[in-house]
Image 1 (cartoon, protein in one colour):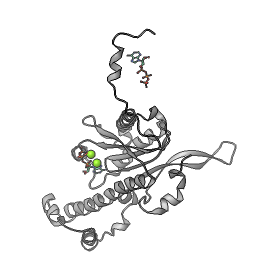
Image 2 (spheres, rainbow, N blue to C red):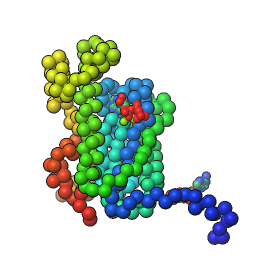
Image 3 (tube, rainbow, N blue to C red):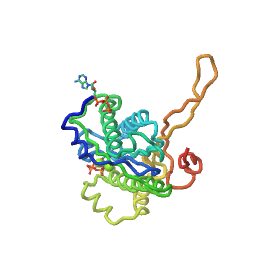
Image 4 (cartoon, rainbow, N blue to C red):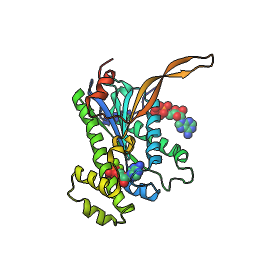
Length: 255
Ligand code: ATP
Ligand code: ATP
Ligand code: MG
Ligand code: MG
């Protein structure tokens, strides 16, 4: 097809292909979800329906983008790790972040009613998205550790904060004041002595966040017996220590 005289403006687009051989992470995070969660009646400190909807949306993203080998989610965020050698969209950074973010957001709305059957979103939710490169295995592990440590710190704080409000009748500012300058051990102690909550017995999904990986799982077949298929499964593993990575060494090796 003949090119128009306007065609040259394409040259104004910059080449944003990600460095070869580096881990590509796309992270999405809800815009203003402190407000969104309040206005949509999320249970505090953790609304399991909302977390499950986030995981459903993330699963849709992994079903579409087969080169995502692992996803990790907590609160209003999800991180998607692409295989180091992926060639999807020629590794173009904006293509990756916008497609992942857009699909995540539309799936969040599309599946909303399965998790919140009695309400509709009051306004269109927004997620931001970014692409970040991690050149070494240690860097990608540290990235995921950072997000899981963030989950732990926030969840311990929120669990204690909301126990003080919902069970001890403190106002939000009184609860905030009480927790100011406290260490993890202090919060564990408040939970245990005041509310008989052993934090370690809280659900793993809330303490650890959700890890999505592909696993071969047996499924029943019509003629009897089973066959193995690849499925996206959710786990609440510790991804900071070595155990997960020793058991899933294929994730960090080039194939
Ligand atoms: P920003 O636009 O800068 O991301 P934000 O209000 O979304 O601002 P975040 O730091 O991303 O702030 O925090 C998300 C907030 O959303 C949490 O602090 C919490 O109040 C709320 N939230 C998210 N998911 C849940 C959930 N499943 N249950 C209860 N509250 C939630
Ligand atoms: P890519 O993912 O690379 O963008 P694409 O299939 O979306 O691939 P585009 O170049 O964006 O390709 O073209 C969009 C195509 O969608 C058009 O060629 C046309 O076939 C179809 N399309 C879009 N909007 C309409 C519309 N309003 N009515 C009919 N067809 C449409
Ligand atoms: Mg947010
Ligand atoms: Mg967030």
